[in-house]
Length: 380
Image (cartoon, rainbow, N blue to C red; front, side):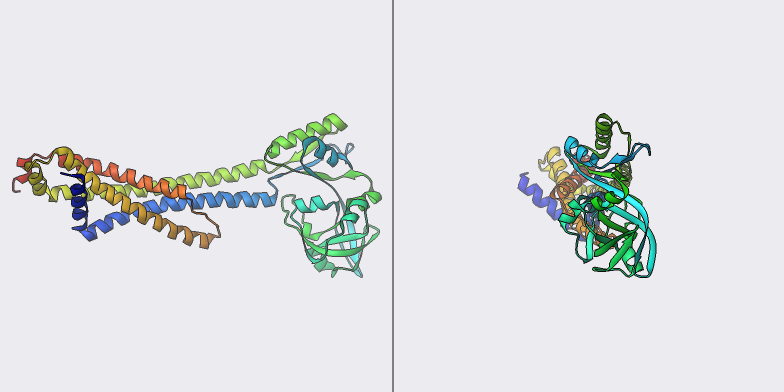
């Protein structure tokens, strides 16, 4: 029997019972679609966690003085920037009473620079940013957090009294930084040079921005060594690397569990293929007996059923990919993810469908090949 004849006979046998074949294909395709959905949504979930952790400051290192009598000083940020080749921002935070007109509130007055605001993901929602020249040399411009501005009724152009100093509001600021634990929306921001002239050259904090060369923990260790060697100052560091790794580990566990569940669904579909082919072997005993009596070799009979299993698997793989796309779109819309369907994932799940289908066809194919013509032709 030629290969072409075997393929034609396989297709004819499958289409002879269309409803049964369709249900068999659907059983496996649901499992294949589930695997594809888990792979794609799992990758999207990891990317979402990384983006959220980046917004919270996973790529940053915060340094504070370990001992109050040995504070960080102006220039330490420049030292770390020069030695470690990373972005560094100095920050001085002072609790003050702030007033706009007859309205008064207690808040934090933050002396910083543009780099610090950029690291914190700031955005001016009303008014304008303080000019670059004022950030460098100092000035009387001030930025108010959104909540603080609403409480005081302050806005661009209003006079603001803070800590005995008089400022003019340049704009209202929205801060994305939530890692520090401070309510930046209730804070006020002025150039570091201006605040240092009033309260001294000590710093509350230095923020470093890591890159691909070092992890945050490695950068933190290097920064403390540089400060100890150059200034003899002990510094405490804070990173979110452990929290980030823990979050990704939790997601990985859930994704792996779901992958196993989806794979078990695929195996159930494969068992369905095996069951249908075993039924087919029993129903076609006389046909197999006639074929073998006419000279068909057992290996050809075995290939015939393996081909049928392969057809079931291939159709299930295609339908499974389409099912997976539907599941991905439905899940992404409900939980707010932005998944990207990868060609490699589609190829992997299709190969999985073919493998499960072929394995499921081994037992029925071997049973059909072992039938003796006389037994196959005997009436039951």
